[in-house]
Image (tube, rainbow, N blue to C red; front, side):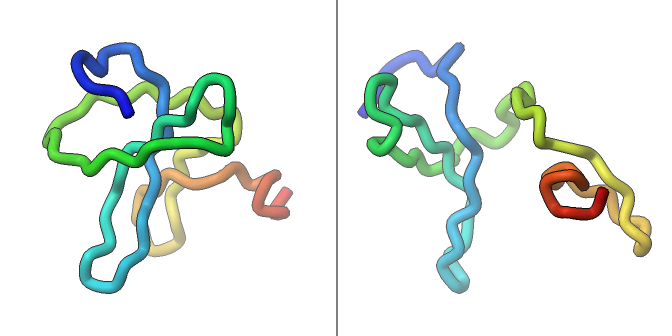
Length: 78
């Protein structure tokens, strides 16, 4: 587990499905063993994020909702 300054740390924003307690968390993988990680509760209310994921796409749904999703290629829609 890391403590202290988090600036520059690479991690993954994850959705944890848990009934009424569903929430986003920030997952940081161990640098030498990607099977090990630590999930941090998100208490920061306006955290800046840079997307570093070739698979991410912004989309406009038929209902007029703007979403961030996997690429159409990944989802088999291409």
